[in-house]
Image (cartoon, rainbow, N blue to C red; front, side):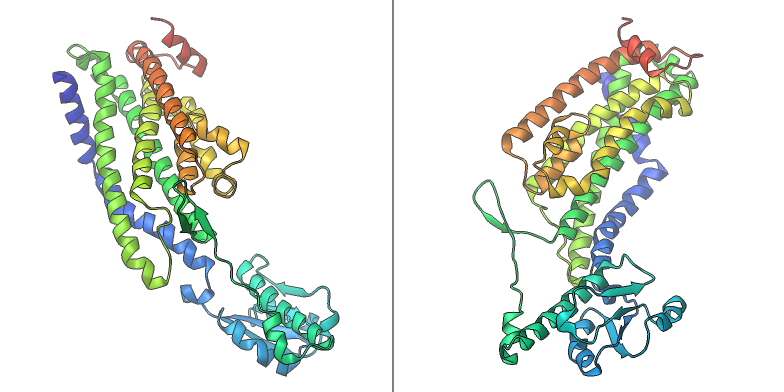
Length: 411
């Protein structure tokens, strides 16, 4: 343990003294806060970001009708105006930016089955949603009045009830749910945190082994240190540094979000309990040792950085898959494919953590997932140790991925 301890301390000091490590440690919490807050602001009203009001012309609408519905639009920072004439005459105004769009209104709203909205930004779902809600409600009201319903009863008959969703936890508690955007962005933030840190430190270890191999430094080190001490010293030293950085990121980010979130009226922090943070650290440690052991072995078998990247791309794919599938993971966490990914060791750290975040993972699934990751990590460490022992001193040949696996069977 004496030589191993010295290597761990050396790797820890080299990592934390690096300028990139210091910069990322300082900037990281603010990037996490920005990733969490900005999408929530963008998904809200246009006024939340300080932008101008959206200007929409209602072609052929009665000015009195427009005046009645204007307050509902103003709450979403949308200005509506009644315009007479043909819809085609407004196309140049939309192109020039004089108005943001126009909605063609028929003379008799009670008989309308379809409305046409024209704008340059056809994917502004916020505006489209408000238009459908306000105009749709007004059309239903006119139909009721035409059918003989007293106007005083129309407002109560067309009022939609408010829905409040609650999550039933495993201990029987009914917890109030956050909105989908908050859940999605919280999950994305922590998934990206796992992805970036595991990928970053895996590549750092791979490059570190590769640099010592190509510079022949490793030959001097191996004269007094066993290959196993060198391998595990690098992994454990950088693991301590990464946990330190992780702790700073989570602590500072939570403080920043707690101070800034309420000022914008945002409910930041879905699922941020002590158990959730404990699972975050646990799955980070498991993913760290799993991927860093693989990167160390590939670094020992690589000839240069380009070669390392070619050998490592299959592992990167398994890290990217959960990020690409984050929306279906959160919305359908009980789908067979999602459950399978949460049990497969290379994707489990991120997928299972997301399922835990939304409260969909059962206790036995969590235990099985952790057990499979630990078993896979033990196998990978054993495999990586054999590849490391053989490949660290072999130079002059660009191994393919199959040949790297043959190194493990050579001793």
